[in-house]
Structures are given as C-alpha cells and as structure tokens.
Image: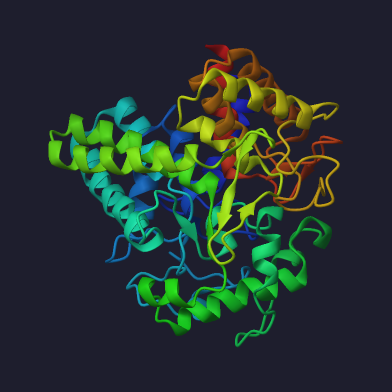
Length: 419
C-alpha cells in the first residue's frame, strides 16, 4: 500500500463518527448526503461492511415521503450554521429540509457488486427507490424529465455561477439571524459572499414556513432551476436502480424505472446547445436557458451514450477549459467574468467532479481524455494533500483539509490508474 492510500484510509478513520463519516472536522460536523455516497464507494475498495454502514446511517434520515435530506444531524455540534433549530423540519431524526444529488443508488450498485450482501442491498435498494420516486413526484410534477432544485445547496455545487441570475431574484431579508460559522474555519475569500448566504437562508425560511410540504414549496419557490448536473446524476442512478431491480427479481419496478430513465434521457438530449458545446440547465421561473459556463454542462457524459459528434465537441471544449491549468477540471470556464479559481464552486477543481467526468468520458469511449483528467486529479492530491478542492491555476489545496470525499476519490482513481 502506498503512503497516499494509507493516508486516505487514515482520514476516513479520523472522520468516522460511528458508522457515518463527516466531510471534515469542525467545518462540516454532520453526515452529508452525496459526500457519504462517494465515501461509501471508497470504503468498498477495502471494507465493504463499513461501506454498507455508511449508506445505512444516511438512510436513517430518510423522510416518510421518500426524500433523503442533504444533512443528517446525528449528533449536536455548535461549529456549523444552519443547524436543526433553523431548519425546523418535521422528521423524527433531525435533518435539513432539502436534498442533494442522488449518488446513493450509484454507490449501492458498487457495494452490491463488491460485497453481494443481498439482504442489506435490498433494504437500501428500497430506500433508493423511494427517493427516486420522490425526485420525479416532488421535483418534476409536470413530467418534463428534468428535475428541479429549489435551493442552490441541493446541487452540491452550492455557490456556482449557474445560480447567479436565479439567486439574484431571491431577497436578502431573513427571519433567521445569519450567524455564519464557515468563515471561522476557512478564509472568507474561499467561501460564498455574505449577500448570497442571506439569500440561502431566506430560502430556508420560506420552505420552513411551508411546513416543508413539497407541493406548497413548489408553488412558493422563488428559486427553481432544472439542473442538468443533478438530472444527469439522477439518470445514472436510475440506470443502476433498474439493474438492481432486475437482479432482485422486481420486474414491475424495473419497468417503472426504465420508463422514467427514457423520459429523462430525451429531456437531457434536448438541452444540448451546439454553439456552446455543452448542455444547459433551465431556469423554471423565467423559462430561460442557464448559460453560465460551469462543469455541469459536461455531466451528461455520465449517463448518456452520446453521438460521436457531440462527444468530440465536448472533449474539444473541455480541453479549451483545461489549457494551461495546473489542475483540471475547473468548475467555471477560465477567463469568464464569473471565474474565481479559489472561491467555493466558482472555479476550483474538485476530485469528485473529476471522478464523475472520468466515468462519463470512459462511457463515451474517450480513454485518453479520461486518463489525462485522472492523472491531473491524482497529481494534485499527491502534491497538496486531501484538500476539499484545488486552485486549478496554482494547484493549491483550498477549503477544508483532511477531506473525506477527496480521500475516497483518490483511492478510486488510483485503483483505476493501476488497472
């Protein structure tokens, strides 16, 4: 075992809080949804039992309507805002009231294939299926095939330029006093600006006042974006769920999932914009395309078998974005007005985004582009350690340190590199 793999395992052990993993100490002291799914896939390389436990602890926070929230507050902590008192959710287990990209089912298929514990896999499959149905019921009530986010935090790409136009319509007034803790742990110039944080909390207040009822939230939401990255991840999750349903001899559920997958596949393809060489999200309040140049535009690689001309256009555009950078892949196109290489989701490179894009490039028969991106991510981590993200210009590790999903990503990417 090389020293970096040993260090990655040490970080996951250090961030273990009893069957679930915090992203990093103090800055993020609870269980985050998509973080844990990535972490479970890292654990699956050497401790399948612990990988299953990660997803099981996340599923403890599942709501009666099927939603798996973006944070599960298993234990109290005063190092993070907003905590359970701000969210005011009706769930028996304290959680946030919003969700995150559904990597859960993708991780579950990996775990099942690594460990084959049918009973545990089946219980988690049922949780994943309830959440999958929730996405289509609560976040695509019109049956378009694209799922909407009602809060930027639901994207995982919290502070992305993709939200600037839609978020600008959200008032900065809050019923809840804003008491940020993040800038006490990480430099303010790497974090969201204060005005945006007030808008984030305005949205939390709005939905809490709806009693977290999805129908009322949909009606009242001042922020409503059909996000191409989340929808692409949902489609990949749907593909993996369909495979699991057939393995568990659930043909009716497999057919139901397949029909949803087909609808979403067509909807994503309709969001391709040849003049941009990428896919776009849609602002459901204004009806306009979201043309901000972010990594989300390439994420459909993950879940679509694309025509060769589209793939070639995407790969060429990704090369333009990466040209001259020390670390790929940037989350905002360099040189655009929104590009900030050190600020949270406004330019930095993230190992988990690289991981998803690499899987998409491999799916679409682009092994050379995938290998280049994999080597870039591995080199950044080996040079700078397991930082939350990396300045793509200087290579500097930024944000939280000793970060769980970066450790998991390193192990997965390094295993692929060895293979």
